Image (cartoon, rainbow, N blue to C red; front, side, top):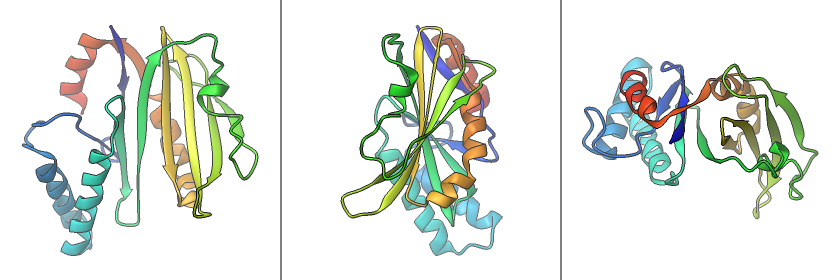
Length: 196
């Protein structure tokens, strides 16, 4: 069995646990509350700000789909909090990578920006920036990446209505995307203990 490994900067990203208990945390409430308190201690934020952050973290955990891994960007969590989803499926060589990033999405409000992304661990992939308008007329930005390597199609997605902030975060997201590699499942289990 193959899966993916993500080498991430622990000063910038936080891995979202997928099962509880996890490390020293009995449940999601303890995890989120502790993180909120730690970030208050490290900044000039108020206890109320910490409680709001903790609630946002709980929501990110609750909304995670079973097939996704999530990483939360904590560069400036009180002003711009977002997460990325990482997922993978068995490769479908009949489907171009452009289709995996919805390069032909008819719902976009401006042309999709499609770029090649070079990874040191995976074959060259693609990144699509898609601006999509929702039912309320608000425009969100999807930054979606796709790679194909070692029998897997690997996809990373970041979404935000704070489009300028997400654009500014693209270098960090690019780095996270390039850190992904395909490994044997047993190797990932050993690696997770050391890195996440």
